[in-house]
Length: 422
Ligand code: AMP
Ligand code: MG
Image 1: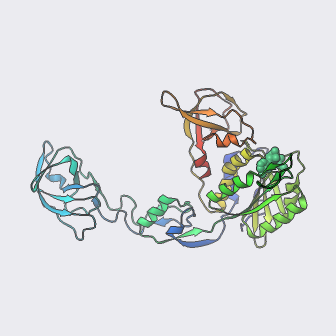
Image 2: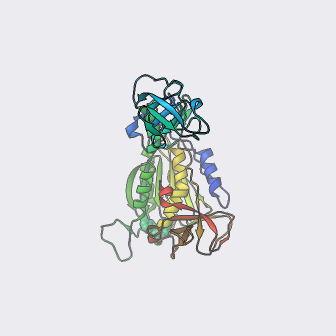
Image 3: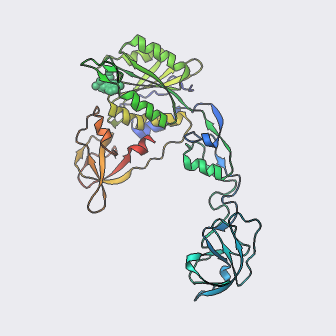
């Protein structure tokens, strides 16, 4: 469970900007303490605890990047072809080191150690062979096609930074450095449930005024992708006593409890009163659309506290607030560095007006225009409850706080759903 103070989410301003929110999370939320050592094969998706310094140079020795001929650059004529005698042959994995004498070339293959004295490699496609002589053209640079020891990662330097969420490429780098196990943070444990008297489980009988639960399925997958272990607590009625009991139990064995529905203003405020009996609650009026206020709280657990996040009920608002609000919190709790997400510039095909001082996300499909540029086409329905607006589009345009209008042709930043959910 998480080491959270009762007031760690306290925020009294009228509107919480997203950058301010990330700063607040970074300052007040402490990563969970548990650490475990796992073999590389189980490290994918886990968060690295400490900087990993390279125990060896990578590559470990100077070697050839191509199949060809290793030479001394000083032997080459700058103005014309050079004839060199082939003085030996070295393959990848060959033991010992050859020496290239002046006036000689060594036949070499990709990954084979550079012969002593050689500093440059000609690709076999670029040379002419005449028996045991090779004729090489002018114009190659010194050091061409040679990979220097340590040019990928230098022994003693940080190869992977603490807080990296390990993807395939990070694990591959650790393997290339000869590492067999890594110290990672323990996985976060999250409990989820949906609220609402109208919400029923898919497959169960549905009254004419009921809807099937979509949000738990959305959240379970988004959380799993974020490396979290999920406990699904089902659908709870709009009943403070049931909510309170469930929250109280969930807080004993989870780092975070995430719910959807029941936090909108004006509605009977079941979630608020239940949370306040088990801990404390504040509403973050995050300056984001879609996404109404997000309820943030701390639940008293057995030995430590659990974070509480109450998301809106509408599925699109759940998605947007999850990727923009919950994910930074999860990453911080998990000891991961903030996600590096750069919006890709695309060209809007539509006009759009928005309020200043809040960040707005517009669901769009991408297409290639006749001039080769990528264009973003807005989905016609923008209701926060319209799930097909997510399934029929590619991602979100991000309209920053200071923007109030875009016109057809305006450059805007785009995030794919894959990038946001990954
Ligand atoms: P609420 O925030 O509880 O007022 O809910 C806002 C809207 O989202 C209402 O139309 C709810 O019926 C709908 N909603 C709430 N929970 C879910 C859910 N789990 N799946 C799909 N829609 C939901
Ligand atoms: Mg509700």
